[in-house]
Length: 359
Image (cartoon, rainbow, N blue to C red; front, side, top):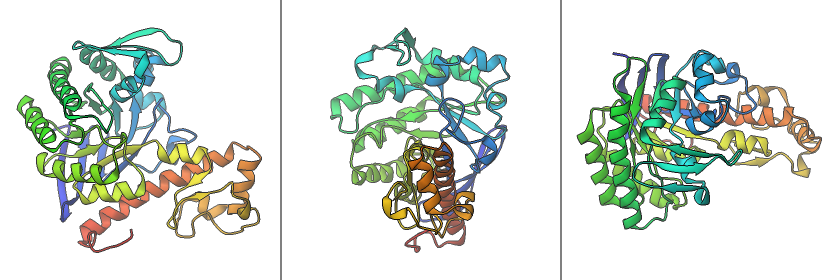
C-alpha cells in the first residue's frame, strides 16, 4: 500500500504516528514548512529538517505553470526535495482575492494577482494541476469563508465543498503515487462541522483529512473548541491536517487535540521581518538593546544560527540590510518549530505530554 498511517503511542488525545508515503515515512506530529512556489523562502532544501513540506497549486499554476514543472520531472525533482510533499489546492488563495473573483457552483473565476489575467478554477482543473505537479498528498478544491461567517454562509461553503469533493474524487481517479485529502469546512458551528465530517465519509475511504476554515479570523478559544469537536468527529485511524496553523502555542494546542499535521508561513515570514521564535518568547532582532549582545539568539536552541552567531551580529545584518539576516532567522524559526513538534512527539511516546507545562 502506497499510503498508510499507524499510531505508535497516545497521551490523551495527542498521538505519535507514522504516515507512510511513496517518498518516505513521516513521523507525526509534523510541522510542514511552506514552500509556496517550490521553495521554502531563503532556505536550501538541504537545510530543512522537516519530514514533509507544502507547496501551493495556485502559485505554481501562475508561475512557472504546472506543465513546466511536469516537463522538468515533477515537483520533487524541480525543487530538489526527495521527501514527501503536500500541495494546497489554492482554495484559500483564490477566496482571499475577494474583489478579484466570482464564485458559482461550477468553480471560481478570478484574476491573477500577478498580471490581472482571467483564470477559472474548477474542482476538476485543480486536481489536474496537482496531478501534474506530482505531490504525494493533494488537497481538494474547497470553498473557504472567514472565521466569523454566520451559519448560513458557513453552511453554503461547507456543503459546496462536499459537492466539490465528489467532483475532485471523480477527477482524481486512482493512483499509487498520490492521494487526495478532503477538506472539512463548517466555520465555528459545531453541528455543521459534525455533519460535514459525516458527509465526507459517505463519499469515500480517505487516507487523511484536512481541517480547513480555522485561523481565519476567529479567536483561539473558538479554534481550540472546534478542534476538540473534530477530534471526535474524524475517524481516529487517519492523519488529521490542520491547515495554515503553526504558531508554537497553536501547535501544542492542536497536538493536544489530536492533530497530526500542520503548516504555516509564519516562521519564514517572521524571519524575513526580523522576528524570531525563542523559548523565552518572540525576539525582534532589530531592537537597539541587542547591538552589543554577544549571546545566542536562543540559548536553548541547537540550530546553526544559535550555535554560531550572536544577537548583536544578527541585529547588524538586519540594520545593514544584508540578505544573510533573513536567511539565518528563517533557518532558526523553521528549526524551532520542527524541533518543537519532535519534542512533543517524544513526550507523547514517553507518556508525559499532558503533564509537561513547557516543551
